[in-house]
Image 1 (tube, rainbow, N blue to C red):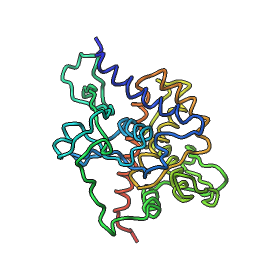
Image 2: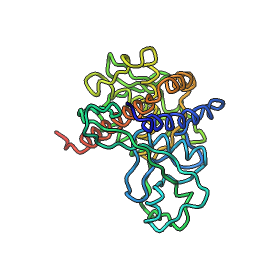
Image 3: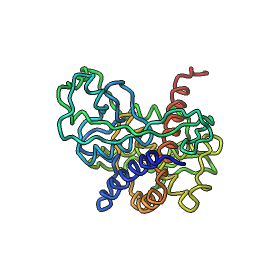
Length: 303
């Protein structure tokens, strides 16, 4: 029999994302479109490791809803071990983590790509804004970097063919090329400069590029049917947000996002694991692109 606890984990996280999306329907803002604080991957204050997958979205949604200005999180016990105390009355935020499960005939486990059996467990974390007695680490002078050159280097090192032409951004599978509008067509928004918004859009298309048959071979047709296109767009949107966080870029909504919002909400409401699937695919795409960029960037010139 499937675990009720596991089902509730999926429901809790999915409903949290749905609520965040619905809050932004009037002005079309998403949990990862932040103007009150820099976009960055949520990080565990104890381990120093960045959260992954759907937990990034869940914690971004909480930060957006409660206007948290920092991306540090930890469990109650972890904060206590750091000499900090969660303030009385503060509400924890749910996240999910997975453990290896040995019994292969248990249907509460999920099958990963390596055929290992894993199952979901819930945990709860608090933001650094909810605790007392913790001093945020200072960023040493001179370590700030200009995110635009880093984004340029990242994209270039992936080896993707990018053409600047026309007035729309899109990936064309037949030619395996990305088309981007002129930089002059982009303007400043509350969450980013024209250049930051241009690169955020380019990263979106780069995630599409990663899903080609000869790369990650990403498809959603069998499971999501008519909603497969919307799912791919959601993966590209999430993957771009993850990469923007890693590169220190802000991100703003694309003009065509409004047309996808209803489809995303429809899929998420019908399938409580859809956001987990999309987030997992986005992580794989971001990891693939980061690895490719690193490997290509380290190659020595041949001439």
